[in-house]
Image 1 (tube, rainbow, N blue to C red):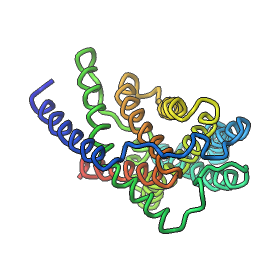
Image 2: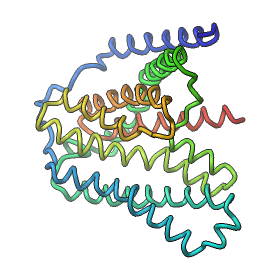
Image 3: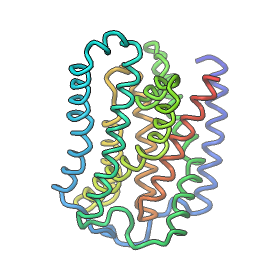
Length: 286
């Protein structure tokens, strides 16, 4: 570990300690005082269907569309191979996200479970919850960064770790030369993906697990599931640092869901995390 890396870790650690202290003094880490069964939990079958909709879109429908594209436009794909890879893959992935979100939202509103909020909130209350999620980023981000950098430097003692990008960020990079697709991928990363993932993991999965195991175990198991889904075989050993950071982020998201008893704060935090990921990416490439 060189001196620059050490200094960077020390600075992040100081920010993390300050953020934790302020949050503790303000009473942020107190659980909600309601019973653990504060929500009408979805049934296991409903959780299965929600994840089936998501996974079938990603693993079945989109690959089928890709195969169909190649079969129909085989000659053009061969001629424009360099163009078609980022463009076709980017459009198909965005289409999958764009179609999955309304399906999941519709299903969540008709499955009879309390997923979005324990009680009906006003527009102002929802906005305040989103704002709280944005503020919590100031506490969560230094901690997540500290974990990622610490794991990265520990791995460097064993093997050289290549630069790491999440899959969504890699797709975003591939769209830089295509303004419309780039704008749509920004929309997906900033808003669509966070809403889908919070609805799936906190709304459906954590709710269901809480009804069986209690909120603490449900929180941890949901965080583990969240990190496993983000595992990418193509990233090899670099996955370790990504998973460590995402697990900590998922704990914050799960805690927010229990504390605020609604998804809006989780969505605010998740969107803010993704937004700054894009900002840091653009700064690094400028």
